Image: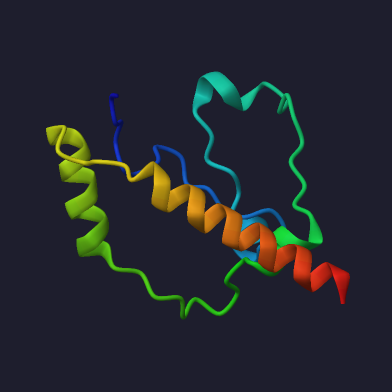
Length: 99
């Protein structure tokens, strides 16, 4: 698997954010004349997960370590742990919606 650059070439802001409205889009000249081919809208549940205050914990060093492990081919995915967490999250969501 090839991992590309970690930084986007064009700044991206979430839809509806103040930053998106405050600064004009700086699109690549080749794409500036084209209209977007799709519209993306977040569900209320997904929108509730957005961090609005900027106080979320972010471990940049951990991200760099993982990115380097991926580039070096040393990163191993524990599919069983991922499956267990997905099932637990689904159960939690189902429990919430049934109340």
